[in-house]
Amino acid sequence: MTSTSPGAPTRPKAAVPRSIASADARRDWPAIDAQLAHGAVEWGLTRTREHLRHHDLTAVLLVEPANVRYVTGTSIMPVWTLHSVDRYVLVPAVGEPVLWEYAGAPPDLGSPYPDLQVRTATSWSVFGSGARAASRAAEFASEISAVLRDWGVENDRIGVDRLDAYGFLALQEADVHLVPGQLALEQARAVKGPDEIELIRRSVRVCDDAVTQLFEHLRPGRTENEVWADFCGAAFAGGGEFVECRLLSSGPRTNPWFREASSRTIERGDLVSFDTDLIGPGGYLADLSRTYLVGSTTPTDRQRRLYADAQTFLAEIIAELKPGAAFDEVGERLSRRFPERYHAQRYPFIAHGSGLSDEYPIIGFGDHHDGEIEAGMVFSVEAYVGAEGEDEGLKLEEQVLVTAEGVEILSRAPHDPSLAAG
Image 1 (spheres, rainbow, N blue to C red):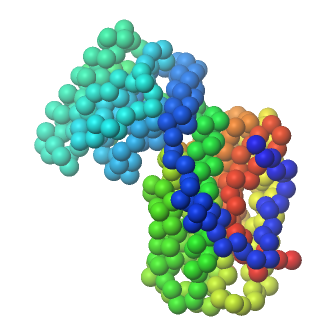
Image 2 (cartoon, helix red, strand yellow):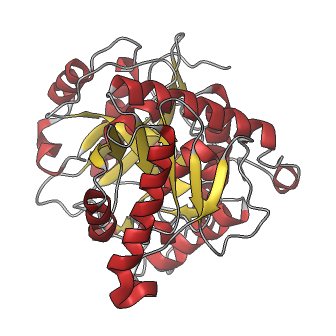
Image 3 (cartoon, one colour):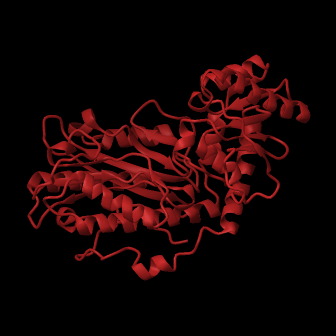
């Protein structure tokens, strides 16, 4: 593993490389193989069982697609199943999990975990069930209760991550003792195993390549939507699965942050800022941000200042990410270092976990998590700089791995040499 000492993000060379991963390299890109997937699931199940016991949970019912993937290695229609409960898994603290799979799933959608029991899910969404949603949910609850009885834990505390009202009320009616389970899963997912880290590297490499292609095609006269399509098309061609947001803005739309891509035509001299939020190959997040200057033009003094302030803050964050450092102490120190003129419109987080999605923990400006940084955590470190009353803002973000030896910057997408110079 290559380790980079904490400090400033790597400066770009004078010439931006044509592509982080060449066309030949993409053709030779290895498939997400069974060995990696199996290792990631074994790690996920071990971590989940440990944290269930820590939270005094006998089992946990998971319907959040990222959680289901974490303990089974399986995924089908992850965006769809964010809003329709069509697959779920019951994981005991001791014993093997049971997955209820989407009824229409193809037979070759197998799990890399050989001991996983698979049954057909009962769906109760109003979309498919209409007025029968409550009775269908009761069937679901009966199936869950039966497995808990078979395990001899029907009276124990059972965690659940996320359910709609029909499912939750049906399980209550079936006398299942439900308690929140998401914290246990988030804490389990916070430290990545070696196979997960390799999967994250692959996602970030695909994302870097897509960002590079966006940069190469960026020019005045194109709309924000067209530029965002460049990124998405390249990311999906490289094996990306979906993007969680479409945060790209240009010119005066860059301040404040959180505007999504629009039909606005980009002009010469505009800043274009974006956040990738890419779920890449194998389901792992590649979350980085870049800001580019459009057209062959000289940046203004303000544009250079914004870029320098963002890079400086990222370097300060990275220098603080040391195993054993407390989340609250790191957040308080960095909050004091962040320039006061940007606080009113600052990004909500200084850093957040990156795995199968945006994850626990966060390092924030306040309202901190308990706990401390550990080796094996992957963070996306954030800097949005934009002052109230100004018509430009700027976003930079890197994805990094915390190791015992230091911080490794995983994201390598090009920075804009004209903005970063000096």
